[in-house]
Length: 332
Image (cartoon, rainbow, N blue to C red; front, side):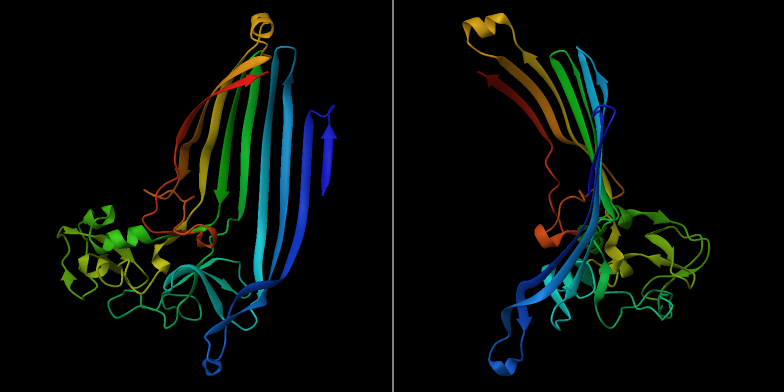
């Protein structure tokens, strides 16, 4: 790492690179049923982390009445499970067909569930009607770990008044929208109510022909064999949230948030010191989680189904709370 200072400490730069190797992680290892047990606790896993952290701050304003500084931070971590002692995968959180798992050679907590069937070139294998089919085995369909995280903020002060603002961002993690899938099943999602007019004869998932020019409710997509209609026949079967495939509900979980903003006023005068024996009284108004920018609709991507190892799983989860705080601090 390095810690640098410039321009009489007004510009500060800290950079750190780290490598961390963990052995003897404890988990339930499957054993042969002939032993009379299903699993045993054993120190049988290994994991590594490699990453970089950067912090930059600059005091752009320093005078008797004014002070101000901006700051930025960036971090990127690369995690990998290097050994599970022969265990194929370990369920960490969620459901068996839609959960997070530890998989040897992969980041901890990858999304695991049903997949579309693909050929050796990773092209979808379609049925005779042009719809995708289900892979024989479940597998990894996403990584909820971010490519990088960061933050930026500003502190500004004038005499006894000060203000601050903080933004945070999370970029690149995958997100599994189970709520959208369930709403599809019951026809309660906005996508279900979409109306389209095909310009050519097309098929739905049941193989029924929808003639050109007929307005229908649903969505038209092309998976590689020509346009098809996603209507009730699709959303209540393979396209359902209760269907065999979870891959279709994974999306980019990137977000940027106005994490906090505050303003303070410090009262200090001779009357406080001489009469009340106080050094100062500080009045502060602050707000947290004031705004969120994300491509996800109706979902707070910072929340998760189970927390902890369940990152990237969403299933009717509540959003993060927005709060407003008013504080009074008395300094003796």
